Image (cartoon, rainbow, N blue to C red):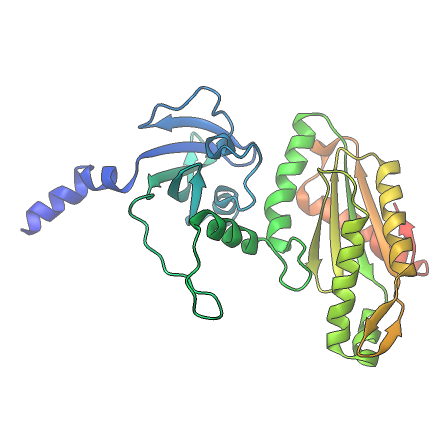
Length: 297
């Protein structure tokens, strides 16, 4: 019996039952290097083409596997089929790639999900979308979170480099935020963060731009393809809107301001992600040292 099990584990039959096909992807460029065990349409060049959504996945586990150098698993759907995807980092010809193992589990997936009243939730696609959204959502503000920055910013920077496009990064921080918590309480501080998040999002007009909570009272705005004047205009819109806003909590009203730092790159290939954020942060703290409630670039 033991020999039979060992033979089963080593002859590839088990693996063939665990996957329908595999593919090797470069998560930075979002491109498929090679497909195996499946006939794939020639237009499935980008890794997200297979899912038929015409956009980069919101929760890219291959990028996460690449960054963290560990294996991740997720459930995703393609029209009427549901797949379990395993992403494994791998060194191929001195180049780091990710091997994705995909298995159709449409007719073999069983799950039980209940709402807060004990009623069963239905709709696997809606459930998957909700889970993917939660992975990148800051629960307090509803903006993207730090994980999203780590995974999305390298892609935007690479695309800007490959397409010879500009990119602008804005870092902003609420002025004297500690005083809000001390004078009005931490719940008022939470309301302030949510108000600022709505204001920042409201000043974003281009579809390629995005806003994320970097941490604490600090936020990051990424503007792929934006020149310095466009970034300055957006930052000034944010600054003035925050200055004019009135925070209301528990019968009290108060005002806040925020400082902004912009780092603009005409040639993105010259900097790393860490340098990009570092330079934007330096401009932010220059704004603070120069009196706050201002934009430096």
